Image (cartoon, rainbow, N blue to C red):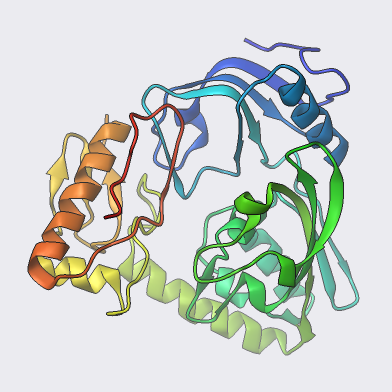
Length: 307
């Protein structure tokens, strides 16, 4: 049910007991106690300050493409940075975009303007905010290569501009959570280039993804980070992981680093299958895998044993 007026000064939507399966690419996840969908930076400030005042746990989510939400859901307040906060604006060689904008859409609008630097985003389904949080990337580059700075709201409810060098962006990681920041918008510095060259590069990446990944399926992208031994998908494939199943969760036969919800999969199914996959690779190769998917919500602790 909608809880209008729940958060003072908040102009967006607030929902109670909202099933998170509606907001994740896995289509998995129990209910959030409260889910707030902001329309502006001031909405984010209002929500954070209200959560502090009410002593509520606060969880920030983009469009749910790189997360696994617990079957019991999420306690407290979930701040959903989705397409209600998705403006994209191009000024010269600088692209401004809000956190809820799809990263691919930002890249496509930049390409149409003849600006190069975001081609890597072709096929990445996440939001801009999530892409910055994870320093999303492909063989063509990653977020940190062209990011200038972000506008963010701190976990104490203050807004600030933070330069890219302070965000600690590294391979599929950042210091954003450690710094207590919620990304609201960002600026990218791109370079002029031929539209034909930009589109050709994106088309090559698109073709590779379509033929090698289950892009149509209910999944969260790669579930493990690559290792010092290279492609984790290859390690999983060579270890015999393709087709492994737990409940409704199945390792894709197209790409072994993808888990697909074939119908009725639970978060426990996916987490359990990930453990089985990691144990298989460790036994076969001696390589320990690290999750790329983030575990969110009311899990039994610890969700993942990184020993």
